[in-house]
Length: 125
Image (tube, rainbow, N blue to C red):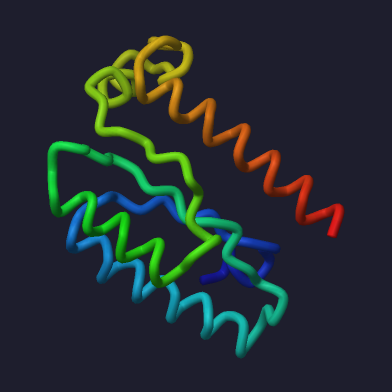
């Protein structure tokens, strides 16, 4: 909570798993508490859906539920569950240096572009 007291916004990674929704609910309550007590300007910059597996119906349901509840706060880019991304830390490298062409790295690059575009629109408004 101390970091949120000084932050402008929070970027929330959310695994596409059922129990992650409970954690998200608790995090949103914490953000509201920080707003009420020490940092009224704190905003949720966005929600990044991670470890998405298109073969898993539950993952798709999580995506739908989060998008329904949080709308435009949820980035369009889905970060897929990806072995190469999981391996990268054991080699001491970020995923995009470990394997730039894997689906996970490509998704993170797409996310970076989306974050930049969203920030440009926000500043222009």
